[in-house]
Length: 477
Ligand code: SF4
Ligand code: SF4
Ligand code: FES
Image 1 (cartoon, rainbow, N blue to C red):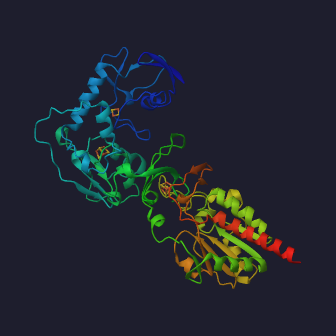
Image 2: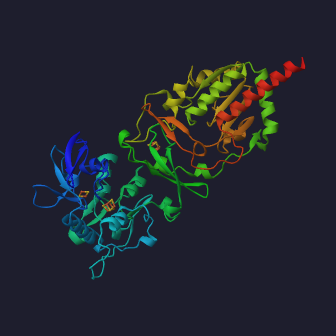
Image 3: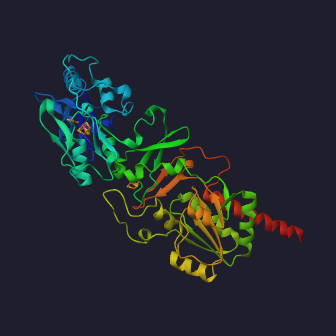
């Protein structure tokens, strides 16, 4: 930490941070567009202008190193005029079409225009008008809204490792476009739209679905892989519309991949809300007693899966499962990437499509592996198998009973002897432990159907009913 002066007042700030972020921590706001903590500094937008004592001209804050004794001015008339000038230039050719722009309500250009702009334009000429273009499977560019901040180009080159976009022409004619004939195909088209500080880059998947201020939000964790990116959920009418990035500088989390970002349909559609018996909808009053009967007569029970369940549910399943009075084997690892050290698919996404393999194995959902369970089920040694939100293993052919707990109607739900509906992670709060062993909280984002149990609740019900039956049996004697 070093001492610097901001508007004449001394503050302690972290000299390892960029000046913009360092002063934010002491509640001083410097507006910006092109700066991003994960990208190289280019100083292109000139929005972050400040005065530095002893330096004659206004300077870009994003490009100013922090050192002991630095004295900056962020609120002088000169700074205000400089920022107003920048905003006026940036908006000269902007169509000012916020009412029909998908970014409205979460747009840095809008926010900075309100907080640091002049509110009027002196630009009287015909505005530049370039037709929008499809530049990716799920990405389009509205050139008229682009402020040439270069974030998109830097993000692709520096983090994704591709160079699909480039800046062409100069001055008034500057335009962001595809660097070659091919459109963008990579897993970060949502992130490109997200880091664009204006409505220039937009995704088709979320286009015109809702105005952003209608969403209810909750802090959550992505469910798509073991990286555990921090998200903010956007829910409207109890439907998950989208995930947005929730920045976590401590963990260096600033982005989401498309696989995780757009994976919302399973929360809204094809949900399992009824108990199933032999592929047909049934009722808990019919299904649960049959499962209880089987527990009583079972030789050995196995519980497989669970790497999509929260640590809290898994803990409850183990505690309650151990009260059933039977030998139980727990195994969360059902797919090869769960057995191996983390394999990165790209800079964020991992090959393990489960958010909580690490948490599940930490809780104790790990023993001899899925192959030994399949072998024992086929030989009859295990005769009751609970499957937590996974497919029934292909090579399973034993005569035992299979109970699938799931959030959605899948083939396994229909193929199982019984299926039990459970809450999705978005309908409860809890924690997932990511590939690095960081335990991260997620909040309830959607209201669950009344009476829908979590996987942990279901095991609690089983152990409770078993113990009640045992007590009743003792009473009868
Ligand atoms: S498209 Fe967006 S991110 Fe790219 S340069 Fe333009 S404003 Fe910046
Ligand atoms: S990298 Fe993994 S955790 Fe992050 S957004 Fe993609 S799927 Fe979700
Ligand atoms: S944020 Fe400093 S010049 Fe753009």
